[in-house]
Length: 406
Ligand code: 9WN
Image (cartoon, rainbow, N blue to C red; front, top):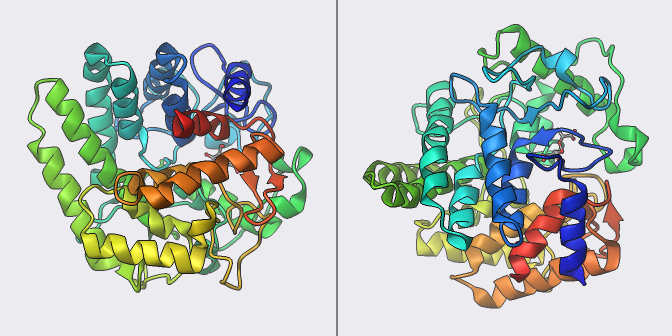
């Protein structure tokens, strides 16, 4: 029943070559959403999974960046803010896109698609594009210590995480002059505040006005983004092997990223973001700090410490992972990335626990199934009551359930 309903959501959100995250709230193609959606779609339509990724990479820029949104020209202007008229940029393919990126979980998605239905021709086609995506991040965003920065909270995929409160304080909000579209469908107390949006818009405008080059006033080394980068290198090593290429450079890069993260972002049983402009660790209680579990080469003692933190501060044994620790004062069970449980974050942590701690991975699958059985494929859930929040029929919620119960 749940599986049939999940496929129904994915069919309804399919747009011919890709999937929209939600028909009403997010009517275009989003970068990391497409990766998660492909991971689920491959279980019933491997062709759609491959098409999803190829459509996204079709809008890749010449510098290798994969934009976080590819706009659908058939969707009326003003359906989403900020739309193409704000970003004012086109990919070489001619598609209007945004100019920022999202966590690079796509190599992992391509590899997972190949595992379900082997397709070396697809891997050969997408491999150079995935390599260029990583090369952009190294060229444009890497610090001397080997860590990649994000330049906007939207790049983290966890827009209003309390982890960004401090670095955002340094951002001048500027005059507003924009109309939010997100509050038409979702209650204001489940979304970022107007104050957050003023800063998001000011940052995006400044980046746009620099020709999408100057990293600007918000530069943060996020554990989830860096873990995704490292896991992408591990996936690329496997993809390279299938393509008859040398996996070694990717293995080395994955190991270097893991080491840099352990050295610079790890403290007291959790990974933390670091503000690249001040050099200070942002000691936050975000579940993003658990996602380095997805790194295959993470040292055993760090894995054990993360598991301890997940149990103590995130109540992991109950099978529902909040996006922010409920013991922290900033926790809010309904407001977007400030506490609710999200299925993609749960999936990333589950990836890291499946082999190492099946006793903890199993309950995460049960928790996700309980949430959707009670509330449907909502965007996020109250981690205690499992009440659904945000939009309905959300694509990655459906897709990742398909993968977790497969
Ligand atoms: C801004 C599409 C995206 C997700 C992000 C999520 C939300 C956008 C927004 O929706 O962000 O990119 O308008 O709030 O935070 O993770 O990719 O589902």
